[in-house]
Image (tube, rainbow, N blue to C red):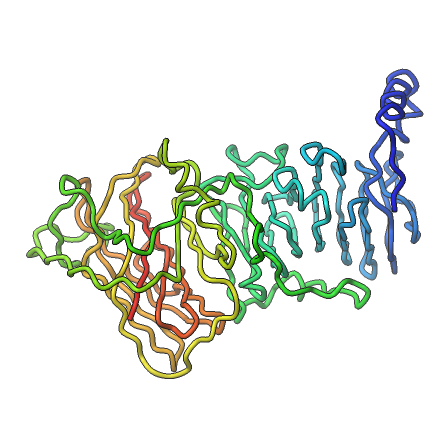
Length: 464
């Protein structure tokens, strides 16, 4: 148990620091202490020189820890958190302040300059997720109560989640390295423990992190730098219990199960056209004979829910925010620039034989121009899943008053966790989705970039 430092003592220490520079060292917040060390491992002192680390040594905010080819450092933080610094790594503890009485005063900020590090959230991070941040040279990582592993180089950042969830965003004008908490930019991506063996990867000059599925995860941080046996074992995800909430700034609205979202206002609807797959300019031939939209199908009780990120929640509709969708027993898995998709938490059992023909049950689609949305209509929807070969094929046409019809197509793999990962897509298209346990429902988010700042995007739920 760490000693309690009185507020009065800290004020006195600050006054001393203002007058006697050599005394400032003891005014820094103690971040934690070394619980395990092996191999080449150092702490960078105030003189800028490396000093050997020993077990039991206190580590203060502002210090840098680095390891060589054989080095491992484990830290036990003042709030009970755990940090592992694996070989050939350099981690700066930029800020670590824990206030058990006033959670709003908690601040945690790490900078992984290179290498691999693991973080298990403690009491400060649990209570103040909005004040937790881990930066790399490329990315900002925010959390909900989480166990995650990060790899960083000058050109690549990878993160894998062992419990809870993270939000990963490229550092940019809308995601500053100087800030705390998760960013909420259009390029932010969420990774949960439902994809425990997968990882998010951000490469230099990429606009957004990409999901690398488990079967292709050959460069996972845990593979690049495996953990020592002394590290705590990864535990089952605890984030599905009641009261587990991601940062409210990732505002998401729930879509009711009895609402059919493939209808739009009459003044926004236009006749649908059959797709012209030979067109290479991102639009389809508007002169093709019109096709009637399919009739609505019977709505089965939803096993998927979605909603919008906060910048796209309309004023006065705050009840459609994240907290309404993030109910016990649900987890957020995939998203695009506007939507995030939830499914029932728990183990997903995927059928291993048969072919499923799905019908569109719910959907929302939009044309986005300069981040402004125009309602669109989905026509000609199709989704087929070959469970035996773990493959899916889907297509739909997006119709809006501002553009000729646009085709969205994708074919890809179905993982053992029930993830639909688009592989072969129409140009500039990203599509990822989910299966329910038993394979009776599916859902996916999609986004296709057009010319300039224009794109079509949406979210769908399917039944069979």
